[in-house]
Image (cartoon, rainbow, N blue to C red):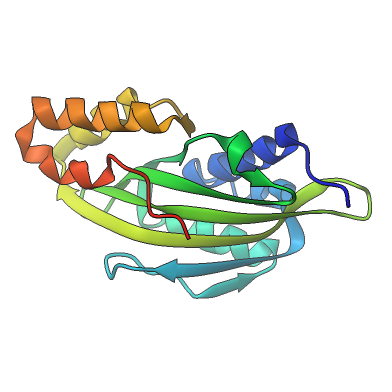
Length: 193
């Protein structure tokens, strides 16, 4: 059985982040197979999504167009070693998100993991065939002027985030501003399945 090359997997993950974080729904069609599926498991009541979306159009609507109506200044980070996470045509990798809830002008920080499935189409091009998003935690904090959001995002390499850098950045933020202590819950990646 052929497997997706690491460079191609990283390219698809980068396309997904570019699409979601920067409101470019057309990129979903480049990254995902036309008949791809999206599912969710959510361990918090602070955010909601439909349990399932079928097809690239529905995925683009759910993760990009509808998402952008509520959130902006979004950055999604892949935590850890992408190469180590790739297992044949599957990958499970933790994520962190830092964004602004526009209506409330609030900081949103969340974590969980992605479980990706890749498949080659008839033309041999690998695309995302399935995506499961697990949301372990999603916290909200007042952030007038998005000052905390900007500082947090400036401290984190995007989108590939080594776990030690995440821990050190969160520690530095909370040491400098004790009121940001809630961020300590995000210093470690989500529990993996």
